Length: 436
Image (cartoon, rainbow, N blue to C red; front, side):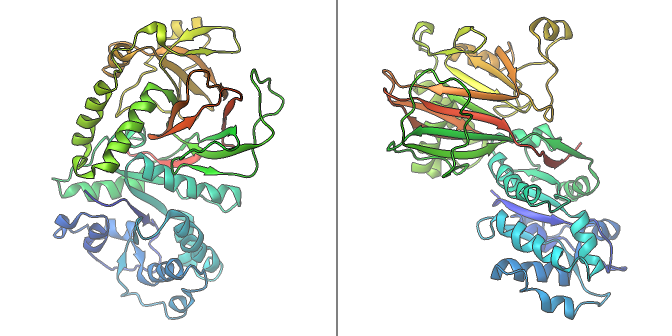
């Protein structure tokens, strides 16, 4: 399986002249070593490639973590015969935040003096080869550019190499990558270059829990000193004087309940026995088997936890999901394609990935979830919301299971105090490339 990678794709043809090159080294960098005989057409390369001196300057800046480290390459640039390639970064070695801070920082520094650096920074697109987690990681790092008013934010295209690939499916990149076809790389780069730009809502999550509780959060959640929960909203339980807070961002879904519990068990099994998880197909088989072993299908409805909404409706479900995309669980659409009459009757609106609204649905039991996942029925429609607060209390429960974008964790529950989860839309959207 190819390592997750991030590839800079500049559509500028400045300084490239009539050069021609192969995409061999870029393909190897993405892990596609079997494509060593592939050659891109010259006109395609001119649109896709970056001049050598720019690529070397960015690489030096990232390697030395210094935006001034690539200056010597600008002082010696200028040959029309310089070869052109795409810079390819293995995310095991170069983190996305390093690419943003030092790689793009290098281009921004020289944009006023070097026209090619200016055009490259203006037109650069990023191709992420990996799964939803890798794509979300890159999007989160690029989001820093919004906060610092460093525009434009490079749009992101996807080569789907993960298990579910729901982000890739939602933006026309498909659920898998055809390794058997040599033309697939060329087509992917062409689509990344010419695809239309679209937007994706991002959602900020804050988890406030009683201080002293031990939690092992996923990579997508980070500790924060400032607990930014809305103090004006009513809390049913009690909140201690000392709290711990975590925050993160998701792009596809946030859930609590049985699906998160199954995901948590699957991730631990995969970490303990990585030889069992060698690709998307084996992962799905293990996931299905683990679901059955956890008694998902055998729990009676009366033992299900309950969710109380401010609109004074009580529903009994084993999982609550807040969904942003049309794709969940490897391409399923549990919200469904609802008819206009039903939307009007329930007070819903048609769902879109950039409408500032999350679709909230429930999964009653294992059999219900199974029918939903094969799309025989829709999930239990609960609400649509632009922000969400969940208040969790322990009682007989010592732990709850939560996940966002496929990263699960076990959340300790207190009998005395409430754990608060708040979800609000990030004020700026993520920028994507549509692959259709």
